[in-house]
Image (cartoon, rainbow, N blue to C red; front, side, top):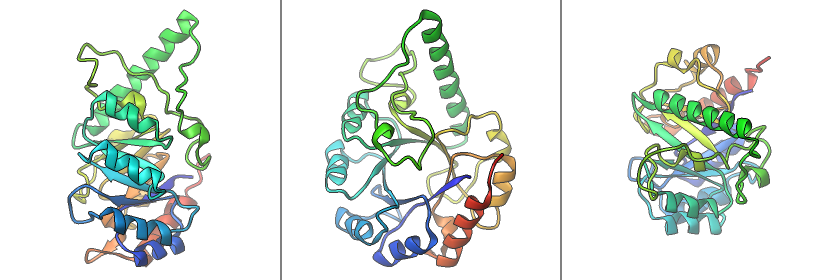
Amino acid sequence: MTKIKICGLMTKDEALMANEARPDLAGVVFAPGRHQVMAEEALVVRKALDKRIPLVGVFVAEPVETILKLVETGTIQMIQLHGKRPIVEVRRLRVAGVPIIQALVGDGAIDQAKDWQNQLRLRRLKEQDSGLEKHQDSDSALANFNGRLAEQPASNLPLADFNGSPDEHPDGDLGLVDFLMVDAGAGSGQRLDWQRLVGLAPTHLFVAGGIQPNNLSNLLQIYQPDFVDVSSGAETKGHKDLNKMVALVAIAHQEERK
């Protein structure tokens, strides 16, 4: 079964719609844009949202302190990062003990994700050949998190080798995150070439961008990621639409994979 995140919630009423539609995850956006919310608004969403639905905070350049405070207050239960951050910042976020999603955006997102997965496979093979134990992060988020999200923890993945500053990672610190997201354009409504997803490991992967009730089944016939992420595709005239939310969740959840 493909799981689904409904992102861009902004109000109590939209949280109540999510309760009725029952997505696996919901999201609030703290980065500037049409769906941006302030901390107080996000807390209203969290309080109205069913406790069984984790709330993801979406960030671009917001300070680490801001993100950590949102975790500490119980406003968000997952962190979604867009853009690159210094390794030291991502390590600080790991201490919060919640899963981290790293979004890769644009035409090169799928290739970036494939490169990352290949690097991790090579690293694992090297570790196996050398007899090293599998790398484990003492701050492993998924090990202590809701088991609905994934079968196996992907946090704790080792950083890929790179020849650069010890304070920065060229691939957005992907070795320190739990999930990857490939997105056509961060809320643009455009979609990726879904045929190009084939060959990308679906585990711990979100696919976003241009997903709507009238095309989600097409995506799932081509490729079955662990998660799909929908924001504007769950809206009518710029506002969340309960009928569309219900339809999207039903389509995702009825796609049992053998």
